[in-house]
Image (cartoon, rainbow, N blue to C red):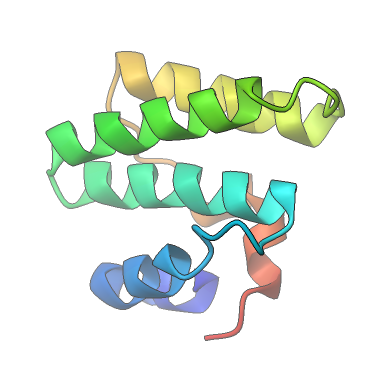
Length: 102
């Protein structure tokens, strides 16, 4: 997914990250995927969809208060900032996604 994103193939990256939105995915992977999809939607000019994904990621993260690590807080912060203003950050901001094949 990150490779596709870095190549500028945002549609392919989004399709790969969509597979992470599953109850079977580990918490940090699913949260990362939601934030990534929001960021990709922003980069594609789909602000309404980006806001939806930012909200979903915040709700998902807040729904699991046992996760208080720095990475989770970074995801929450990225999603909160992205909800307020379109994000054009690079995928390097979401290191867990480097392990998603494709």
